[in-house]
Image 1 (cartoon, rainbow, N blue to C red):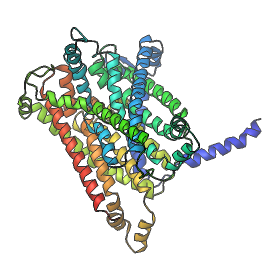
Image 2: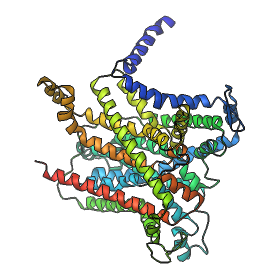
Image 3: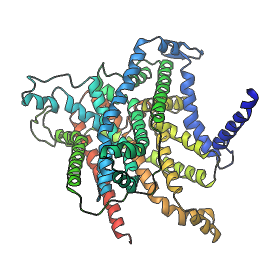
Image 4: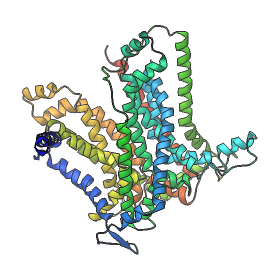
Length: 575
């Protein structure tokens, strides 16, 4: 038996080596150095710390399984683990119910201005996470919009405190956060379904339900699983939402981990909880991906739509879809609009209805020195993070693509690891890494921490763009006598410049909005999101509404200008 298995084992090992083998060369050294310092070392430090002991807030370098034994024997840990996973899972299911029909409508029904329809759903991703959380706090609070509506309509005799600081409030906000992630991932699958497949199913006598079950669902479920997994990763590592609106019954493991590295000052136990959370998430997501295999092949680009006038049923279907899309947008934007409305409220408290209109809170912003310093700090951090991330990400993408490094798939998976790491865990890893090298808390430490997830975004976006280019362009430039630098400057860079700019704007958004990593690294030098977070935790001031409103308007202006320029270029393009 052993002799018969030996050839098969050799073949399998040879295949794995060929697929993931790394060829060490001069060009690969900086890539490997980044992976070791930014990806591998923090993870090893996290795992290593989880095996240490702590006494009176001091780590003892004595290897032990005590932390994992404590976890295994702790009923509270298993309750919190189940709560953490169930909150995110239920929220992602609710978000799927909302996002999947939206993706179908935009991907299969919308004929004109599809980009605009897509951007309108995606914009909330660009809006501050704190703003979205705070908006639901205003809605669900005892003096909030929901209680005011229920009391005024006679449904309740008085305001209820059951909406805020509860598990349901955490699930509601998690679902709200998850919708754009699932929409983006799924809409691309709907666009790529060839129209001929739908028509063939209908010509065969299949009903709409049968067509969905046997054609549409098998071709979109993989993308749905990817979007579901991404949203799950974002929410399962979110300790800000449970801390702000969850209360005691809404506490998750993310809150526990942040507390162990904060007030409790028990880093080894916090690291052990973080490792246990990561392993649990990996197992659950592995099961989800395994249960949604990809079947069938989608060819071509966006599916073509018939130009014939729609039938009566088709018109009603489109009207129903448009109504659902409008309801989805209302769900995404109503909380943000409420924040803008409250920014003009004359009252010091978040009460509804408004007591009067005022610009007082906007005037206070320019007089708040701590806020201005935090905003200035955010700008410095964002500029440094984006500059380094774009430069390094572009260089690494060129190295991986043109140097034809062996194990390219390994590099991509390794660079994507920080993106796929729950926010609270990544924050802890960056604390351990920067602590090891003696980097002081503040701007420098924040820059290193944020680069860990901003740079991979630039790298992966550029790799996708480079792989779509015709390789003969660079070859022709080199054959005509240009050196590699000239070929890059005059041939390649003009082609990928748009992707570089887009990745820079995305990195700017990620940096300016980050809380979960920056909170562990800022120390006494908070950025603007951390300043706002502290205001929300330790004492509300109405000027927070004004800050959020200004950020929202700035974001909408940037997206509007970008869409206008894209549309204008497309209109001027020949043919």
